[in-house]
Length: 226
Image (tube, rainbow, N blue to C red; front, top):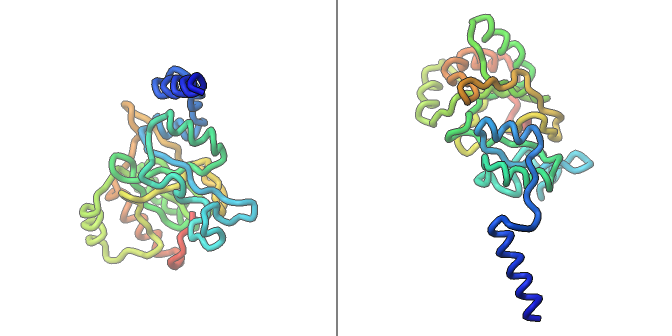
């Protein structure tokens, strides 16, 4: 018995020192790219075969498949070993970006007006950064902002439609090629790297156009969707 316990103890010490046992595999391409961009990510809850959320709320979940569950949002990381471990165990899990802090924030609006908003930005010679296109919403990634800064920007507007949403610190956003209950998520505009970082506009550069576009979209109510 002592010999068996001794072997187990040595095996555990070896794993803790990185000298033995299985190692987390490298993450799949999409999570690995996000980590390379310096974006903290984590797996989403995913969906069941019937389309309901993989979390305990099931069919009553307001964002089926596209939210953190286990682990929680605070576990989001840029550590490739942990990310590799997660997606080795859950290869089809949605890829979630934890927004805010040092990570990008985002402004999102209904998909029905997303293309027109991006086209209007181009007409004004404003270059948007990465644009995530989902079946129900489009999200434009921007430089990190704090709540006081966002409040000042919104206060300067005559009005802000409820269809426009803000993803800052403590928020999250599904990244391509995630599949949620609403459908697949893709890049309308992929991230572009320069000097080792992803190019992102400020929220102030996009806000006027997105507010105007949001006023043309129907109010989706309180139920979130991606």
